[in-house]
Length: 338
Image (cartoon, rainbow, N blue to C red; front, side, top):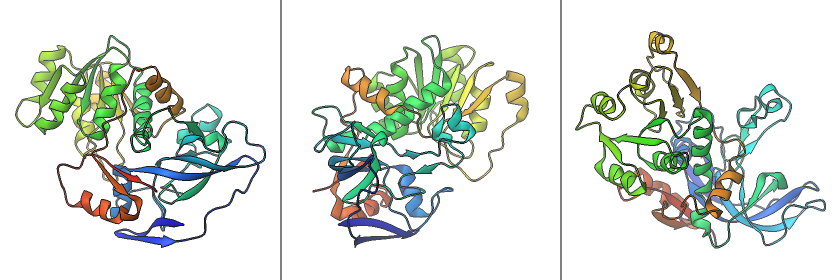
């Protein structure tokens, strides 16, 4: 079978290897159908991920069809369309003991710490699989994983309908967050520096948008909220974003950070203490695949339409080169398997 190997930063190779074999009674062999290229995959490719190891088969937004099952598998059958949870956890550490395996002390993420889905076949335990909604194309279904990240962020923020939620950044992550926050009934304000992204945010249902290159961000937030947003979510992830949000967020508010930046952010502790801000990290997702799929099946969220380009898996290297070209038409690429 073919698999895309990141031997080291900036070196991708499509190689032939033997297909994996089921190794246990609860394991499942999956024939891959589609895989998304995430920003974190690009960071691994560039060598800027603080957590990835090499050589690595990337790919954590991964869907396929069950090709074979172990003798004790009971939750899926051959032919089922599935998405693979990206998390593997030890089940023994403190976070696991309190129901937070997404931050397991021995966490291994498929495509980051262990091999993921940029290959024609992979194995996974049955409890890592979720059956896909009917009639959802595989290349659209890869977006369930990033949507689960957004659901996790909302859960960490404990958003209610009375909140005024500020989302910094309207890129791919920002749009997923918008869809998730809309389900809470809270008012949403979105800021970006690209008018097209803000227009897309409005198309999703956001009424209040701010181009921070053209308008005074702090002044507009005060105009829209009086006291400032009660929840601020960082979907931009630059060095100054955390200190910016501690400045902008209302007293007693919550700030959600999702970025994986190595460089320090110059945050003033005074802002956190004086305002009694809650600064909360949000990493991956905790049992959110089921919630996303249920919301989609109930017609509460739309997953289709986020992927702008589809490349055959055989052309995966060209897909990464296209991303590196800076083509503004590229918003999200999915790799499609035969």
